[in-house]
Length: 249
Image (cartoon, rainbow, N blue to C red; front, side):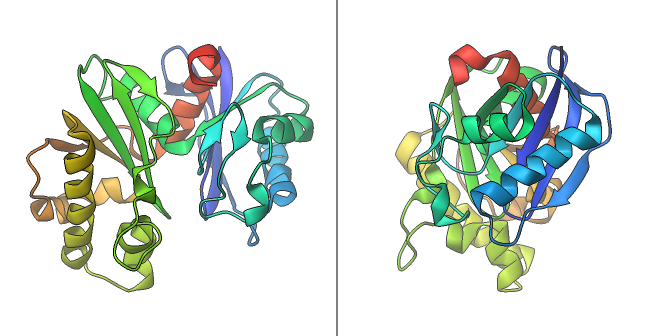
């Protein structure tokens, strides 16, 4: 089945056509900057533009950067506050005229990694951390998704949520070196290890491709590995979500 996978982030909205059975990307990624205000109607227009770009007529899987429950945004995250309570699935379906499945973006990236990547056939509790504008997290137990596992929302010191201090956006904003930022990220992983005691942590998102530059900063006991799919994981996983709608949505 050919599915349009869309990965929505705080800075960019990316899409590609995907074979949802094999996880193979059938086209190059197409990226459109996330509208500055990050408001619902503006972002829905971009989703429609991605559909038009690929001339796609079939199902759409979307990874969305906030907590999603039964298609509804439960908190705005790094987006506009107007997203709270919006039925994201219905909004994007109306904008495109096509069937849409929406999942948390870290859940989507984890789904890709667990179905097609380094997490395949891994048992126990596997946590996927996506490093970008925020710190997304997806959890799987014996390969089954535990939805909305939002570990980046943990309060830390003066910060309402630790992702404000330890995400890749903080590194860019404060012009931190990888060593300086790596120490922060290790603190985040220390809390993850303390709270949920995972068997494996897989890193995705933009900063995962530079893993070698900060891996020496990671001091936790839990094995930590970069995802093989890297930046394509969100797109591929969103497409997989459309195929496996029943257990995810």
